[in-house]
Amino acid sequence: MWVTRLKIKHDCVIGNRCERFKVTTLGTPFNVFQEKGITYAPQVQTLHGKEEKVKEFIKDIKKDNRIKNLEVEGNTIFFVEVRKDKIPSTFYHQRLIHVKPVFVDMGGYEYWEIASWDKKFLTEFITKIEKEVGELKILKMEQTKLSEIYFPRIMPNLTQNQKQAIELALEKGFYVWPKKTNLIKLAKLMNVSVPTFREHLKRAEEKILPNLTTLIK
Image (cartoon, rainbow, N blue to C red; front, side, top):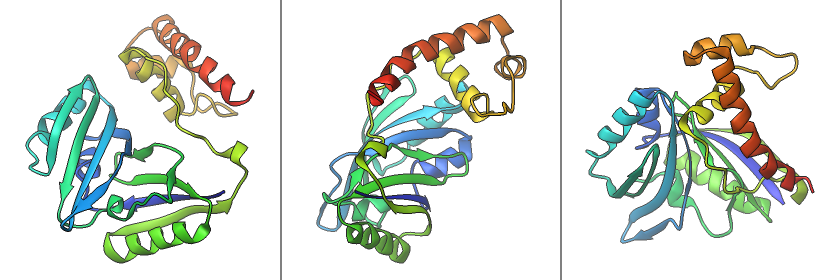
């Protein structure tokens, strides 16, 4: 299996708002299709960031006439993006497999990790994006074993505090060695006591770890 990881930036209804409101998202396009030259891109996006910024993001995207069938549940949104101009999803086809959710950072950059049984399908996709869409950088292109590919799984239902705690821990380097931060600093960033932060983090880990262990059995 061939896998590529791409860093992409273009005129994006999600990326532009991530940059504007300083939030991040995780999402995957579903059954993208075209009719009469128009791209229809159904997708689910989960927003991560300060609660007030997430609310501002959602309020703003409701005003975008390219967004249809919008549904909101907490910090997760579903919608169909309707575009006459070309976007990366325009060139997505059935010979490509999303092996990770698309991550969009606070700078508006998208990170795609996709795979195919034939390298040419990946290179064709990359060529079309470079020619038609915008900025693109290839972070990885390699042939790998199936056991080394992460396939999306249903994640456990974390509370907002648990999500925030584990996202902070990951972002600030709590899980790397040597550690780049500690519980005291993380609790301060979350504006809670150390025992409270430790409890949120512990509960998040208890929910996530059982899912991770099934991947290595």
